[in-house]
Image (tube, rainbow, N blue to C red; front, side, top):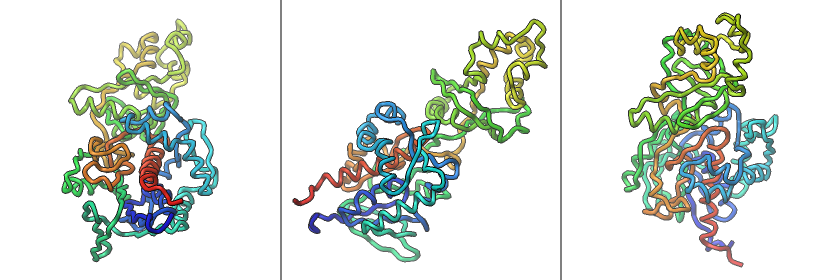
Amino acid sequence: MHSKNRKKIIIVGGGPSGMMAAIQLSKHHDVCLYEKGKTLGKKFLVAGKGGFNLSNNLNGRDLRSQYTPENIFDPILKNFDSKQTRKWLQGLGIETFIGSSGRIFPIKGIKPIAVLKALKNRILEDKGVIYLEHEMIDFDSNQVVFKHLNNISTKKYDACIFALGGGSWSITGSNGNWLSLMKKNNILTRPFEASNCGLEIDFSKTNINQFIGEPLKNISISFSGITVKGEAIITSYGLEGNAIYPMVQYIREKLKAQEPVVIAMDFKPFNSEQQLLQKLLPTTKPKNYKYIYNLNNTQQSIIKGFTNKKEYLNPESFDKSLKNITLPITGLRPIEEAISTVGGIKIEELNRNLSLKKIPNIYIAGEMFDWDTITGGFLLQGCFATGYHISKSILESQPEDS
């Protein structure tokens, strides 16, 4: 590409979507990546402590259906799906494997810091420039204003990509303070709300406090016609875990409408009621439940707390309770504790290429706009894919000279 075709591109935010965009664009344009923290990818590293899944092996319609709004993510994920994520990582020297759950992980021995280093090194190898401790304090259609230590500087651009993150885990710098700058530029937003977070449940009728931190394995959770099998963790406020998080987006809307919310827990999702009944004997007594059904103390505590005495003492009704323990939800955990958020820039403010309709040379990547998905590799996949989608649009907007 001749120098006359090289654009000056500013990327604000050094998370996965910002780094993806920098890698894709640095070979072809003059790219400067600005991060307000002391290092790139801080949330990326924090997320890696809980099991570093980089994507999920679902593809095609199965992958796209995990995202809301699906029509927005349909072209984004067609451009860059999980197969392409694995190929892209391999090109960076990061080999991956597919776990039994379908999640995609770096092979054993490759830690989050090594993945981050590979991303950073590729940006620098391709002549991208990285500026740390630069906080954006203002912008318009031609320039971005940064604060670095006590100095204020203004940087002009041809194209700008904002990848400033959502509103969760503020300790990593993802605090959503940029919302006020969007409003100043007449970009419509909506407040952030928690997603992929714990559910608050009144466990006061149980002795559950002694079991905080204990897992409830091989269960299913049902709500509003949706059932998810997996695991939940007992917490001081209620439940969290991979069987809980997919329910949050549906529960959130019901709670906002001030409607009562009750989830159903099935301790034996792989057995029918009939199969469980066959385990009973005429002489079965409540003290035998633990052994007949292979229940642990945590499970028994929940069953006792949410089943009336008459049902508990009757083996046949107890059998039904195992398949349908109803738990009233009193609320969601706050944004600060959430794995991700919804909210931010409204979808109607964006073109299909994720540029702003009001300022078309500014693009919005990652968690900044109003979309949702579940844990299990889908969040990172979404962030990588939005960064790639924007980069592809910029690269195609001005063909290289022959």
